Length: 380
Image 1 (cartoon, rainbow, N blue to C red):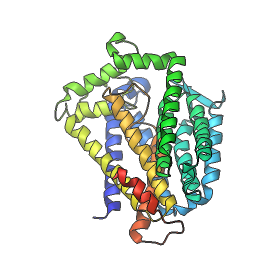
Image 2 (cartoon, rainbow, N blue to C red; image 1 turned 135 degrees about the horizontal axis):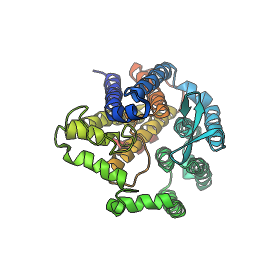
Image 3 (spheres, helix red, strand yellow; image 1 turned 60 degrees about the vertical axis):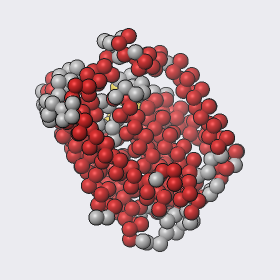
């Protein structure tokens, strides 16, 4: 079986599991809020149909198309990031102004920026091979990253900002950042994150609840405590599909960021590990593609999209099992959310197109990427 077949099978298995678990986790909450227990499932299926159309479209369009449109796509995403901050345009939910309303639906510009910034960075690194070894260009790109991160933090959406920046930094690392600049950037980032935590009381509360959830069990520590209550007693095979107890108004909006807790509660350790194995296959194939693709632009795009997927999966799971503070990051393809599902499928469609191109051994137009192969050995 070809790698493309494994990729498609694993991707759509994850999406199918997500649809089933969105219905299971949200049925009680949806019926209480809307009178229709299928409310979130129906909406997610609509998002899936849109995402599927975009996946097919992006898998059919040559990846070289995005090279030509990279700058324009990035500018459009940047404009959306600014518009969402304007009162009357941006919609506030849960204290964050992260959505722009379109009729009964809404889009999340931070999700679009994941797509736009990766394509933009891939083109920049392709056109300027080895440029990250020069300090002045490193600092210039760090300024661009800082502006994007700042726009996301103003919403505020700390989790999405960390994921986007981390994914792009992995691309820059493969592009040739010097070790001293990595250390400098890391120290600067740590100081910046510390300042943002100190100036935002709710972030400090999340840190405190992470260290000791029981210090405020009905407040900041409530969500992580209920998540652990879902995971801990579930045993090997769980309580069975649709039999979660925590979805009965214990775990808040379980179809969103903490859906993995419901998966473990109903399907047990076996179900949780199976889902993670599916993600592992997709991520492994993505990094393998980045290492073997025959030109820089294809390699950098595959690397960027796969890195964002890896980091987002890691952050979500780490939050759910209590390894890091709550960040509000969805589990890709599984959690309820239109922008996340649609953009993630679009990105995977581009990766799939690169994979198909490699399998057909079509000649590429850009530079040889032998230096990338050496850098990407760490990702094997």
